[in-house]
Image 1 (cartoon, rainbow, N blue to C red):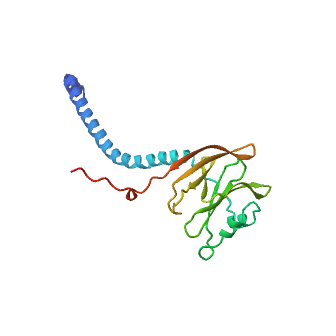
Image 2 (tube, one colour; image 1 turned 30 degrees about the horizontal axis):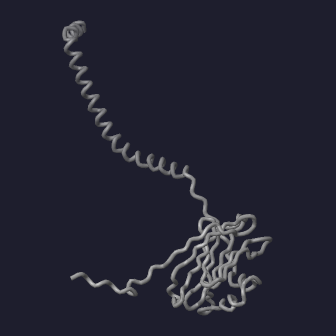
Image 3 (cartoon, rainbow, N blue to C red; image 1 turned 180 degrees about the horizontal axis):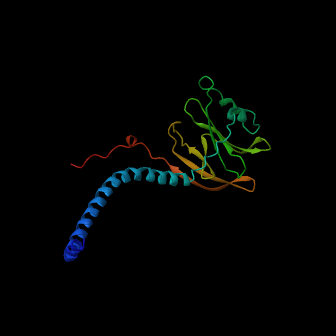
Length: 218
């Protein structure tokens, strides 16, 4: 045994180095194989982990609150029962086809109330010309007329919290379908009423065919 030990001692420096090198190579190979095996599993495990993080991020992001859907009103009945609406407009308010009435209805906050205001435009059946525009404000469980415009043709809209009324302008000889221009008036609710903020006038261009074209230069 001492001889064996002695022979081992005689070869110790080189043998230890060789054994260490071999062990290092084997360890490297084992780690490489282990890494390859773990790599495949790791790649598959990475997916669920990534999905969970995405799902967590999505869950952490608050969703947009649904917008409030306004309660619809019977606009036809509202106009017909309104004493401020002229008899002429009420006569125009009749079904065009079956029970379809020529009214456009919009909802929005114009007067700062807790409920949406209602804008009603009454049109003609034939050419959809506006004969009356009205704004109704909810008050004590019912709707009160707070604005009316009956200068035909007229149309009212809600634009970023303001009431915008368009009145088309006709010159002598203009057909109903072709006004010469329009006045656009913006109203804002102030101290319990609509006050005019500003107005603009637009002239419509004439159809090119109405004006003779100049002859080309020779």
